[in-house]
Image (cartoon, rainbow, N blue to C red; front, side, top):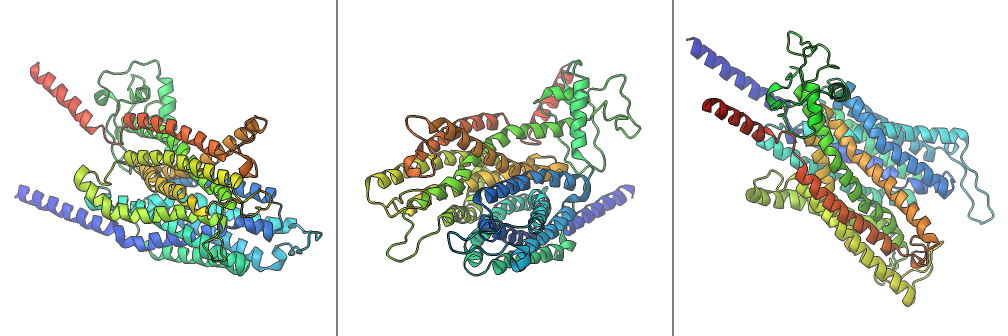
Length: 594
């Protein structure tokens, strides 16, 4: 009877667990609210930020240098603020509350910027069209109101960017096959919506701002952000809300401090058996097996006679003894860093397509056929987004199922394989960019030109459509490497640090921008007095932008080789289970033989 009762109880517990799983993990049922929220949020944010430089110079009467400086500081601060937002999310509020507060902050920021355009007293008077007319700059109060809007946008981005991907992936059960497939698809569709938002913003919203009214053009993003807020909170009852579990950074610091204190100790021969093991019952992290990398950290989990252990199995003083689980979590972080460095370098290619490809377009023939219409230089970036938008559905819905049957892997390829493909395509992107620029420059110098670009030089008769191949390739770089990079951080970071992992993606973009600026500054100074002339002058026809592109291509070749070494060395989180089982099996055989 006892066995039957016990069996019945176990079956009931399993049924309850299954039922709870169905209730908690809504998967794709909650996606209309989450993806809808993200789509409208990006439409709102990008719709304002994409044309902000023109707004500052045209409405606030700022000098180009001042406006560019403000935009650069704003973009850099926004990217690096994600680290603070991720820390607050993982430590105090959790992803749901952080996203809710950040979405409201973003709406308030967009509304404040819209008011600067709608209310005359919040922006300077319009400049006259004559050359001798003086322009009045913004007052202290007007700048304060504008910067307040920027500050709220930074606060919103600090919470939204590192948390929205992780929050969306939280809605899928990672223990089931359908949940794993759902997480992989979600990352692809996230970038699809991101690119869709960029396409709409760079075309329709920018057109309204530039040709209809700034008040209406900035009001549309604010309304879209309000819709984003409404969608997010409408799905509140359906979401899986992972709670914050305290500062994960404290645990990392404890491992480093204790390993340093115990650096004189000798490492055990069988660390997977002798190291201190403890897993807090309330921990949301998955249990990690022992890995043999960064073994110097293992000393933090060596039990000495001076170490004391509580009745529940935990260490009395976590600053003197850490668990093997804590050590393995720190190893996860350290393993990610070399891959992150490779990601910073490959993103240099994307930065160039967003800057110098636009300058190439300025000095190219942008007229379409015989009609009196020229493609705006900045609109060529749309081709990069189109490439990503077209490729992701094809890859996710057609190639992945096909490749899954061949390779047996959930995503068709491993995450690092996809990232490696993206880095390889980045090499091709820069080579094609260099060849196209060489052709554009040659035509400009040897054939009749199409006029003079203000403050630059002759416009080459080469059709601007020749820029499409390099931009399409750059879109594929994003489709492979960027999507894989975000998925990589989510899956390889400990569960209580996933928001911090998400912030790494944006910090990497920030570092790439700064690195690109440093390279441009160095090359500009070193080639200015050279016999070959300045590579990067205002007039591209007098420079050698193609040499600059070849330089980046060479860097990407080295980066690809570096990435291959890192990828071969890298061990995925939890991938050491088989090794651990082999070690235990060998020990068991030794005992049997004895």
